[in-house]
Structures are given as structure tokens and as C-alpha cells.
Amino acid sequence: MSEYRAIIRWDRATPDFTKGRYSREHTWTFDGGTTIPASPAPSVVPAPWSNPANVDPEEAFVAAVASCHMLTFLHLAAKAGFSVARYEDHAIGYMAKDPRGIPWVSAIELRPRIVYSGDARPTGPVEDRLHHDAHEQCYISSSIKTAVRVVGAAAAGSGSGSER
Image (cartoon, rainbow, N blue to C red; front, side, top):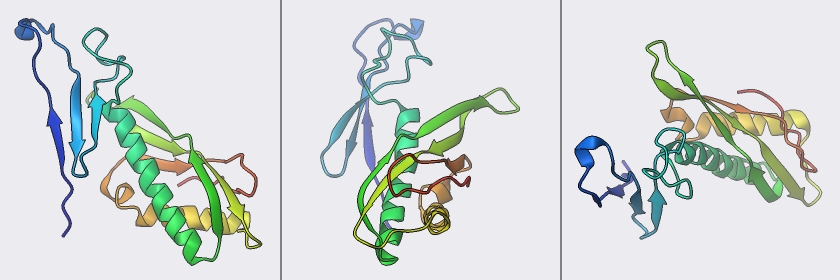
């Protein structure tokens, strides 16, 4: 089986750790060498103990789901003979509280805008099927309990609009 690794690194910069007065800014380093500045969402931990310019775990989770869906969709579209020229998704994750009152990302809406090139273009139902199959085959979607929905897209040639 494949393995995926990340190094999460945080260093204390102030002496007031036990009083909760410390920065939560940290970094994520991936196997290719890319390092991304991370922080909790400012809605969870206010500044100055967070940094709104950094990626927060909730954003990264939404991006991982949307990215996996897109990559699977592109693969399936190519196999079906459709040439995708552009794929843009303005994905949204929604927080809710579970029955115990603990917040979680309960739903993610994918809002792909897809532009096709060439003569072969999927009909609305065919594109919906591609999205359904992409969701079913996406490794990330198969690994989570969060509901993922694909909602209407506004780009030319895109007929997305079904809920998953």
C-alpha cells in the first residue's frame, strides 16, 4: 500500500504557554519539499494567536476533497473522450455541531465550473454521471463521513447540478 506523509512543526515563541498566550502558527512540510504556513482558523483561535493569512486545517480539508474530486473527474472525462480545457471549483465546507456539541465539517459543496474544448461535450446527465463516479472513486471522499455535494456550475459547457 502507498504511504503519504507530512511533517507538522510548531515551536513555542513566548513564555506564556500554560496561560494560553502562544501563537498557534505552524508549518506543514510535504515529501516534495513544499512547506505551507498553517494556523487555526481565526474564528476558532483569534489573532494574535492565529494568522488568517495561513492555511487552516478546515480549509485544507475542503481543498483536499475538492482536489481529489477534480483529479478523478479529469481522469474519467478523458477516458470518456471529453477534453476538459478548464476546471475551477469554489468549494465550501460547512461546520456544524454533532449531537455531543463538538464542531465538525458536516458538509462540503463542490461548485465546479468546467469548460470543454473540442466537439465532444457531455450532456447534463452524462456530466452528472461523471461527477457521481468521480465522487465514488475519489480516495479522499471514500475516507470521510462528511457529506459531499456537487451543485450547479455556471461555466459554458457545464451541466453540473446533481447532489451527491
